[in-house]
Image (spheres, one colour):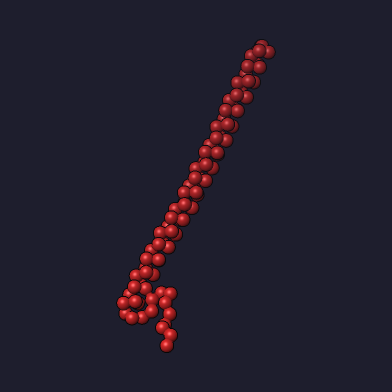
Amino acid sequence: MVSKFERRKDTVQELTESGATHVGRIAMIIAGAVRDVTREIGDWISDGIEMSEASKRAQADEGRTAGRADSDGEPGAGESEPRT
């Protein structure tokens, strides 16, 4: 026959093992969520950088286009025809 002490020891052992398993699973869920959130934040920042670079390229292109129009004697960007 199993003693009262041994039954209690077995119960504590089972509860501890079960708790460790559940805590491990929860930690994996949290780690996965942190990884996913970090990835999304990184993608969002990358999008912002790409938009900023595209804006700079568009401004530079606009400047080159305006420069060509000025050298042709035509009004450039933001300029109007001279009033007579």
